[in-house]
Amino acid sequence: MKKILIINGHPNPESFNFGIVAAYKKGALQSNAEVQEITIANLQFSPNLEFGYQKRTTQEPDLVSAGEKILWADHLVWIHPVWWGGLPAITKGFIDRLFLPGFAFQFRENSIFWDKLLKGKTAHIITTLDQPSWYYKLVYGKPSVNMLKKSTLGFCGVKTKKVTYIGIIKTADAVLKNKWLNKKTKIYNHWASRQEKY
Image (cartoon, rainbow, N blue to C red; front, side, top):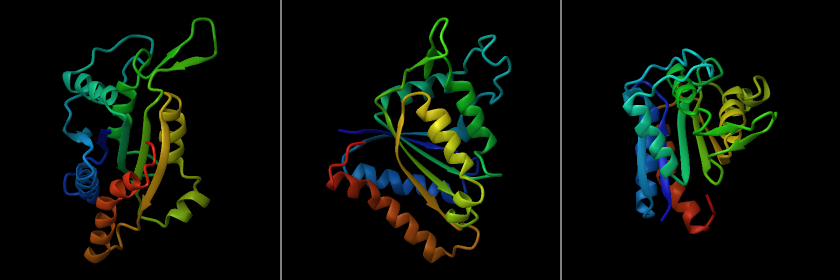
């Protein structure tokens, strides 16, 4: 049984991202996967890595719990909007505070290399846009995806199997949004039926 962790990076509970979370969770549960969630906006923590890596900052209980869920999961589903080409501040702060040496990676002594402590896990990034996805890729170079997929998850050993772009959100009517949500409900069942490995 697959263990899936859905990480919601949108700070607004009335956002379309919360609908995507519910739809994806529904599809995963229909396929008999185990599912847990992290809603970053609901966590009580400071997003500021005050001392960088020079001095350890004690993690709040919600961050400790979030770390346990990440270690539990086989597959991480990151759902977030693109703001100014990147991640919402609360999501970036979550990564800064949690993906630390000793948890997500470990620098080797007297070496430029490091150990990837989350190796073996996979990910799916689902991001919402207020511009066409081709424009975000071609003109801006998809910076949020590069940061999350390569500089964060890949750095820690997590292999991103798929990136899904949804948009344009601001011009979408209710019919189109429902179509997108129905697609997300079916997406896990589709992969499970093809026996694709996460």
